[in-house]
Amino acid sequence: MSNSIDYTGREPLVEARHLKKYFKLPRKGVLHAVDDLSFNVYPGETLGLVGESGCGKSTVGNVMMRLLPKTDGQLLYRGKDVFTEWPDKLEISKKMQIIFQDPYSSLNPRKTVDKILSEPYFIHKYGGGDAIAKAVRELCDRVELPHNILSRFPHELDGGMRQVVGIARALSLDSDLIICDEPVSSLDVSVQARIINLLMDLQKRLNLSYLFISHDLSVVRHISNRIAIMYLGQIVEMADTDEIFTNAMHPYSIALLSAVPRVNTGSKVARIVLKGDVPSPVNPKPGCRFAPRCWMSRPACAAENQELVETAPGHFVFCRFAAEARERAKAAQTYSLD
Image (cartoon, rainbow, N blue to C red; front, side):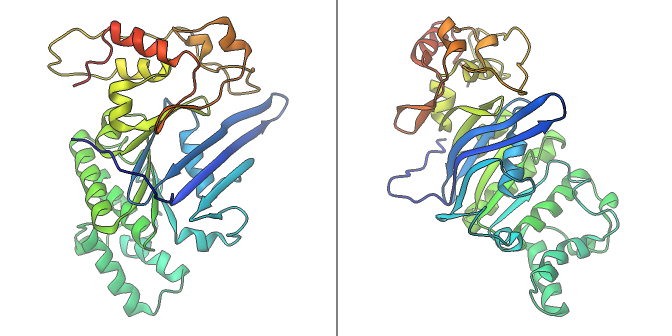
């Protein structure tokens, strides 16, 4: 089933422009966690942000939510810069919310579920106690959370139920954009499916937009309309989900897809094994950051800076040898993904 959306004439809900987040390290230099990221999230869509651990994808979500200060760049919400035109963090929190990876550490262990879900309403002066109590119960109904758990503490719930509480909290202020920071990575597979189906159902009912951060390509493929693939602080490829999985062009994307577990493919699939260590994001050298591990690397890759180029409508690639990489990958049968 295709996840494609027609973006013709649609204005983005959120637009990141050249977003950067650097960390100064004493006596070591500057760590480039997020380095010049640009992307859009449209109303009602899910943009999957994929990459290996340490690539900076969670930092992107934290900067967008202003949990970390930006180093440079813009983040536009409906055309207004979140960093300059929304000085009050509480106001932008009504528009964007985040679901954290660990459903246990993200919930206050000293508060009951009722107190946790009531807190956003109290902070934003939603109304009196009766109005807030009614809103909390309606919120529970929205995410299919039984009312009898409202008196319980987070440690009394299983991981899946705790994550549903986290989802309910993110929905409490009727935000348009939900940043999902690996919301199912710590859960059992059966529970993962329940949470993903809940998120998709809520999106249809409430017209939500998601930035879905994950390292699991199978999960991202199921929920996302478009996918952006990150490597060492930069987006190396971005396109519709179907396009990424059938026509990936960046050598890193191709290597990731070749490692996806398959069942009953009917044919052998060549796996691309990346060699060498991931370069340090501290004081990165000019040129392509993937070059030291790339199976398509040329001398020019390490010597010259790359840029994200639109090779086809909606398909952006950060590699000058992308077309050749795609042809070599298809010849080696790395695309039998179903």
